Structures are given as C-alpha cells and as structure tokens.
Amino acid sequence: MLVILSSPSGAGKTTLSRRLMAWDPTLRFSVSATTRPPRPGEEDGREYFFRSRAEFEAMVARGEMLEHAEVFGNLYGSPRAPVEAAMAAGRDTLFDIDWQGGQQIKQAMREDVVSIFILPPSIAELERRLHGRAQDSDEVIRGRMAKSEAEISHWAEYDYVIVNDDLDVSEAQLRTILQAERLRRERQPWLADFVRDLNREFDAR
Ligand code: ADP
Ligand code: 5GP
Image (cartoon, rainbow, N blue to C red):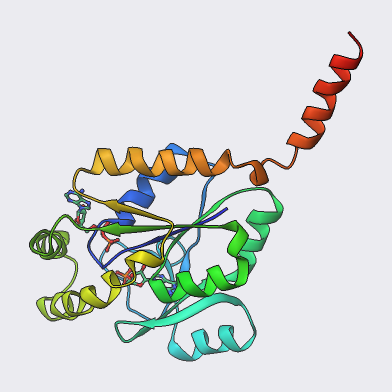
C-alpha cells in the first residue's frame, strides 16, 4: 500500500507518521527531497533530502520522482526508487505529502493508494500548533496559515478523514485504517491458494 497523509501545515502529519512508524516497523517512510532549507534538528536523508533547485530539477528531468510539486515557494518530491523497492519487498510506504502529490500518485497507482486527510480541530488551534512548534518565523507561519484554506479545500478527495484533536485517538484511528486496508481481499493475493487447500481438506474427509 501507498499510504498518503495530507493536511494543512501544523495539523499533525509529522507527529502522527512518527507514531505510526514506531507502531509498525515494517512501514517505510518516504523521505522526500526538497529545496527548502533544513529546520533546526532536521538531518539530510532523515526528514528530507535537502537539495538545491538545480539538483532537484535534474532529478525530475531524469524521471527519478514519483511525484513533485511546488509548496510554499519550494519544490518537494517523492523519490521513485525507494518506493518501488519497498513494493517489490511487499512493504507499505507512508507519504507525508500535499494534495498535489497525493493526486499524482493516485493517478499513477490508484489500486495501491490509501489516502488520509488530517484536519485540525479548529483554525485557532492550527495556528497555536504552528507557533508551538517554534521552528518557523512569524512570516513563514503567516504564509502557511494563508495556504491552509486551500489545502483544506481538498479534504473530500481523500479516502479517510481524521480530525486530529487528541493525538492518542488519532493514532488509534490511523492504526485501524491500516489494519482494515491490509485485510482487503485484493491485498491478500495468497487467499485463493489458501481456500483451495481448505477445499482439498473438505474433499479428503
Ligand atoms: P505537520 O507535520 O502537519 O506540519 P506537526 O506534526 O509538525 O504538523 O505538528 C505541529 C505541532 O503541533 C507540533 O508541535 C506537534 O507536537 C503539535 N501537535 C500535533 N498533533 C497534536 C495534537 N493532537 N494535540 C496537540 N498538539 C499537537
Ligand atoms: P514542511 O516544509 O512543513 O516539511 O512541508 C510543507 C508541505 O510540503 C507539507 O504539506 C508536506 O506534506 C508537503 N510535502 C512534503 N514532502 C512532499 C513531497 O515529496 N511531495 C509533495 N507534493 N509535497 C510534499
């Protein structure tokens, strides 16, 4: 599965994806490339691959991005190779990307996509969280707040929507979604053989 988490900036995607990864170590996080500068504490190759605009554009030109988009004046994109490797190994990938990236991945790989939109409990709380994160300047926060309405307008394009009020509740809801999606018949291709064996057992009685 390709699990896409989107939300307005500050609603809690990063926090929730970290919790999901801690819960399920088989889940792979898609580390995006970006032209935005690192925030304090962010490391190249862990939160993002921090690249110059020229390097980023060269990656796009070589077809190395599964999707890419401009967000808040910077380029962001999901490298293709690690996603394909995870799929070949039967592992699910988690994406923290915006609605533009979500749409591109859905168009390319609809069957494998599970998309989840995270809403804040209120706009006042969204702003409080952006300030509380204390990693962006007031000007950057104003810019992100100004874009929130546009990001939120895409909520209905997603398979699932979570209002992230209480973190523990939201995490439990995300786990439930993953568990249910993994049980979908088409995601258990081994079932046909399994049921054939059950039938053989009937025949042998
Ligand atoms: P995003 O990745 O969507 O931009 P973050 O995960 O960085 O958002 O969250 C923004 C801030 O809000 C962080 O300081 C985080 O600890 C806090 N936060 C996230 N979810 C909640 C929640 N349910 N209740 C209170 N604070 C939260
Ligand atoms: P931030 O700068 O706060 O880490 O991320 C800003 C926005 O860019 C968030 O909405 C985040 O989901 C989005 N984003 C991060 N990586 C990607 C990516 O690879 N592709 C796209 N389309 N959006 C991304």
